[in-house]
Amino acid sequence: MLFEITTTSLMAGLVGYSYLKKNGLSDVDKIQKICLNCGLTIKEGSDTKTIQLYRKKKYDWGTEYVYRIPLGLSFQDFEKRIHHLRDGLNSKKSVIELSDLLKLNFRTNIIKQVQNVIKNRKHLQKDVELEYDGMLHIKVLSNPLPVNLLFDESLLSKCKGWQIPLGQTRYGFIHYDMERGHITLAGSTRKGKTVFLKLLITSLIYRQSNNTKLTLIDLKGGLAFTRFKDLKQVETVATDLNSALKALKNVKNEMEKTKGWFDKSGCEDIKEAGINTRHFIIVDEAAQISPQIITGKEEKEKARQCEEVLSEIARIGAGLGYRLVYCSQYPTADVMNKQIKQNCDTVITYKLRDAIASRVVLDESGAEDLPIPGRAIYKTPDGVQIVQTPFITNEQIEKIIKPNIVMKARKEDIAIEEPAEARRNTFELEEM
Image (cartoon, rainbow, N blue to C red; front, side, top):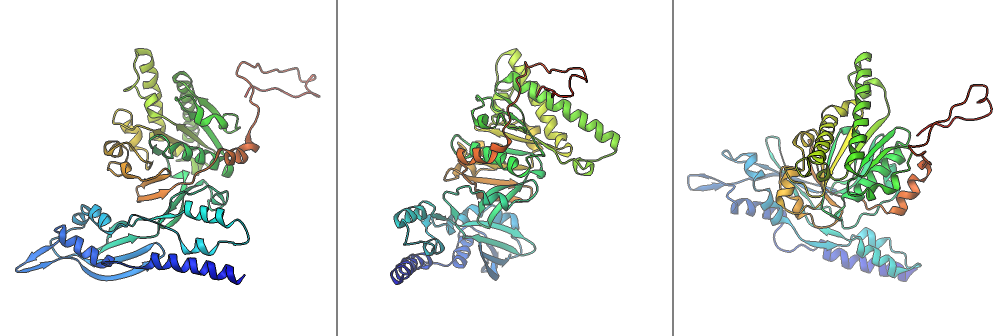
């Protein structure tokens, strides 16, 4: 017991010393020097004036520095130099947290425990956020992000209502509320986009199994949605342009009936109507449904009709209880329909091929620099955050969704109906 405590304390002390040891300039000095070198200064006679530190405050996520800005400089001047601040403050190292070492149990397989600690080490890479309220607020976020965040069912218990787990930011765990509206989702192959889609669907099934409807469109063959096709919540899994058009027309007809009912009832939106059901339309690859990309007159017309319905869902669907998740691996201006994109308030993007693709999705570069799979940029009207999203395995998915799998009747099956007397001791078969 004494050996266990001593060894653990020694390891924690060594790592803690290397973690806490400071070399060179402090962050305050670095910020001041970066501003001077970047020309964020004002000349007044022979004097050169720059920002003056007013106060600083430490938080769990890092430190906030509040500065006075000299007359003649604007907040936008500092926003243009935010990359200089990030690069100047960054330390590209991986660290092991003291709390992880203190949890080691020497009575079990210590080697495996150490391997897990190393595997889940965190990047010590600072980030910077700027705010202005008459004073310049520079938030230096030093709380490291996990390199590999594994899904656990406990994440679902942290959510309420239509929330799903989104992942870990420098501020801590965050969720996403599907009631916010539509989502644009992007990411290159094997960077986390498909895993997030599966996490999203699984979370909805777990949290809102009785209120969720799903129309899934994957024109890459439908492999990403294979394990969901027999869920009672799934209306359709479309795997080609014909079935996608049919599925979207069904959604449009349903949406028009809902709108008509709202008009008659005098309800403004789904919440006022007191309807709990939400219908999610998930398109896994926008390029396969874009009339700008598809060739052939007939196929191009089908794609045009598909895009027209998606635009209508994006434009008026949110208030009627319809939520669009619009995805692309290779976003370009031709692929990402402008009307759909403008009506998607939330953007989640994983690593993209280049800055051009990033600007198409985010209206700014940055997604091309995301370092590892699962790391994403999360952008809403409230701001931008970097998040490490959870990795959920197929085994975990199957365990969670299993109670919702049903044997669906084939479309060609004919409903059987008998006279009332004959049905007293029988049951009706209804086409699903």
